[in-house]
Image 1: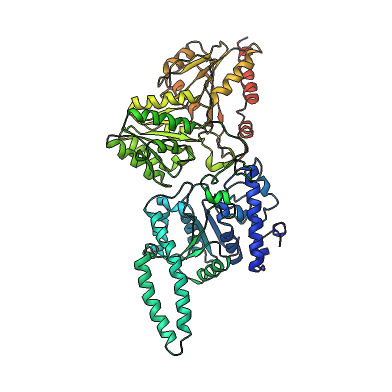
Image 2 (image 1 turned 135 degrees about the horizontal axis):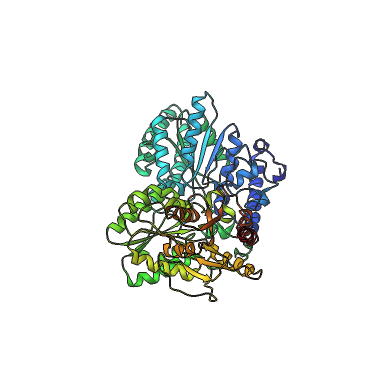
Length: 625
């Protein structure tokens, strides 16, 4: 049966194992060619093909519930649940999401964009089932990297303690995004070794059962002994002590073995852990050799594995290289990341100072408080983290860092619109969740040179500081005044008497282009680089107010609680006469799509801004006569 003939999971249940293998090969080929064209998460999806096939042959969605952790390993699930024809649109504007999306399919029961959430969500679904007297199964498919996040253990402890019927499938590929770190990774390596034990066990049991009369009693006695030995040698007791029945480890690419063990798990009236060992990138040799490079990849050439178009330098790389330069002179500087050394480019620092670099796994809360401890111990920690991932550490930022006024610097990568990853990765909320916290300084560079200046300035502050920046770095523009960066002081880039734009970070370049075009129409607009989001430049605002100026705030961030809100608050508190128009993202969750399309969609592109500013200026002139 071809993939094009599959419209529902039930369509694959009559296939034999040979047909399943052919289907798995076609699914892999489809995933490879689609990701090569669109970009996306390749390695994790290639490793999860057989697991997904087995799941949909044994379980019956949408009645049974399957929650993926993280959702980027759900491509095979989409192919088997009526979305094969649209799969070529994945991660494209208006197309399929790269993560589970409930509005796409009834087979998507929960949306997961950040790691370590699936067991908690699945436990909630299981308890809802029990309270409503239903009997369906709930399954959480968890990558081993997700188990580096503490939320998983909270859920495991709760589930095992209550003995709720739940199946957790541990997809152990020895990777999360970067190579797994920590004691838990070593524990899984120990469990993987027991696969050989299981093979030997089956052979010995078969031999004993062939013996007349004494065979069966010996087999039972050996079972008791071997379980004791196995617990001693391989320590699966980690899960059993939490109240889970442990099954495995099994080969996650062995269709027959997985279907057998999944059916066994369905018969158990207790929480179950099924340990599947898989190979990340399985079926595409280049991804097998370098799974980290193909975790989240831009479009690439299948034959060579090389990306189709070289991206410009990343802001994260600028930050890491600058920090490494500073670290040569200051031994207090250390770098921290939460399983994202490549994504944030923190690996550039690690290469030069491996002993001063800490990857804590997918554990942002722990990372923030550890940074607080490092700072309290006399060091100067810099935390490389995506804007949306730091949301998980809000309490720790407030309580452990800012309340003690400790010199921790948060380097917020992927701030602003997050391109093809969609709603869970749009960095549009960081100003709002950080600027109200006492002692926090918040900065946003307009270009790579200014980011380097901000890193140096953050060392002089000696207090909490967050620097937000998008993925792709902007080269310094030599056509404008090069006034040195000073925290709390904004810089005028172009003069203008009709209006002023206070632009933040990535919006500075857009504001300059709009100003140039308006100048050709006879409208003079001053462009101000509002590089310090907090504290505001009171002197600049007072200067603008003295002239009763028309002011536009411009930010790639939600309007509620953002930079524009801060300027409005200042205006109200000081009874200022500024005529303020706030321009940003109207509060909503933004879908996936390419950056330029999303910018146009939220009306922050040049054409939309040009019209809004022109209309406001002309309206004010008409009112003033």
